[in-house]
Image 1: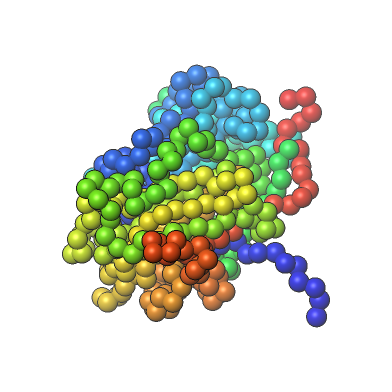
Image 2: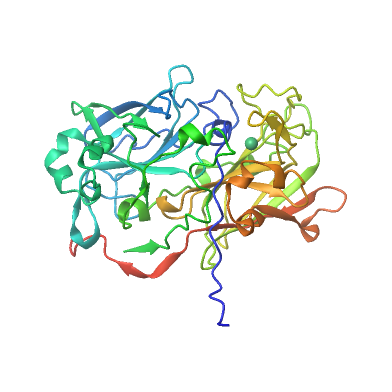
Length: 199
Length: 239
Ligand SMILES: [Fe+3]
């Protein structure tokens, strides 16, 4: 026998279930309980950079919209700095939470376009939003990233995108847009399955 | 400077695809997750302040009460948020949601025939203190039926969401109650392959923390991913 390492194990994940909205986005779900709902304003009024709007649908393996999903966003500011990492504009949160429209399944998020982030070993990471998805039927929250199709040169050198072995699957992480509005659909399973990350 | 996290043990967590939990079949990715080294994108995370959260938000007996107390067994749920190194995680946001004592959620999609309780909302939130402690007051949720097998029942449970300090520590789980015979029968609990991981989701009856003649207590510690004591530079010098 040897000594015990004495670590504790991470608490195991369980699905967020069908009623995640009453817990994490009650106001959006039409349930008035808290004075302040969290996650509504990602960038805040003082953020520098291009204001953008992203819409999309999360679909399951049958192609049906996942209407009970909840998505969290974490991003850097236009200078590529995350809150807590360095100075950001007053009110810049970098974090937000959205749920889709209950009828259409389409989600919309409004923020600013993040800058390039300096990653490991000083390597630049293309502008991106970090996304985390939970829903009924998702046993462990799914991490992915959203990049921008108008940052092709940066995307081509991005340390995560270039790690994706099947080149055509990189497109599943790239939102299409015109600089202001972007489309980003997420596919949980099937032909166009989004690349999900073990972070 | 950012510290890296221990690798998440994917054999300890439930797999994405669990045959007996039917909803997971069409909602589980078929391709392998892409493993990436942590960078600032994963190792930083949002913080929350007391200005955003009201003192009553962790008291589910009161935070939605209109005409009196909610129906049900009055309970205290308390514990600590720690990491795998047993270090407390201070000032982190813990959010919970649950069914009422009859097993019914206050959600327009919940059509279970158990009654809605006019005095119970079913959600709460709090920040851990400087030593990682949190505490909620609520009623014990009821078991409820759900459509998986035709006669599937969820054990009494409270959904819990925790942040930690890094976005890659983000966790949602469910807390169960000591002694509940439905735990062993639940297809969602049983998505977890290791019995020790299931045991870790079962809150212990904590008589020392009860309030005599008032509320019974359960203790539930939440463990987030630990971080290495070594650090790496995320930004080049002078930037
Ligand atoms: Fe539930």
